[in-house]
Amino acid sequence: MQESYIKEVPIVDLNKEETDAEIIKNILESQKRLELAHQNFEYAKGDLVDYYSYQIKSEQAKIDYLLKQAKNKKIDNNKIG
Image (cartoon, rainbow, N blue to C red):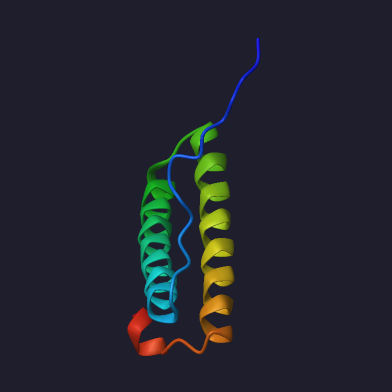
């Protein structure tokens, strides 16, 4: 049995404004997820304590990465929030 993979959505090159907007959107979404993980961590019990601590660490690493990307692309900090 042979499997075949079909590319459903074409990859589109984004212009600078679209790329900047996407980075900002991802930073803001990650900040919201980080805040939620902190709130959930406060009430977590048992194994969920580990889960939320890893989630906090993961979201913080993602935010740090995205902020470096924003800095390298010279995105205005006022747009990030």
